[in-house]
Image (cartoon, rainbow, N blue to C red; front, top):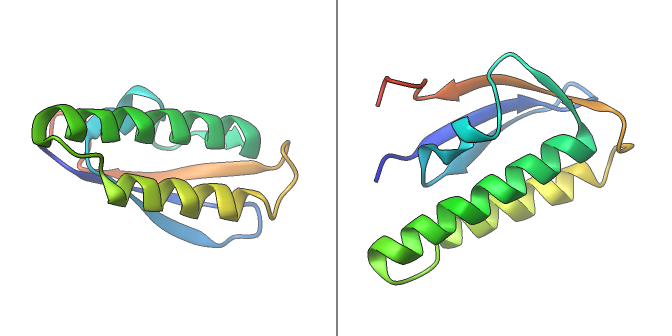
Length: 98
């Protein structure tokens, strides 16, 4: 199962690399796009739940790394207003690159 990293820049300029055990993040986020904190958080949490479900289906257990990334994102998001913006700087691998 291909894994990926999404690099995001938060409203204060802090940059995070967010791990996903699946390329499903491409279904929910676009590289180079800015989202409100609320929208980004909702999209990322939904994508990571799907990624964890894919791991569960394939290996028989949920992905603790997806849960950790979900916690990382939701904890960071609490520091900002819901209408502040998060920018998706990069997604590795890019679509079609895996």
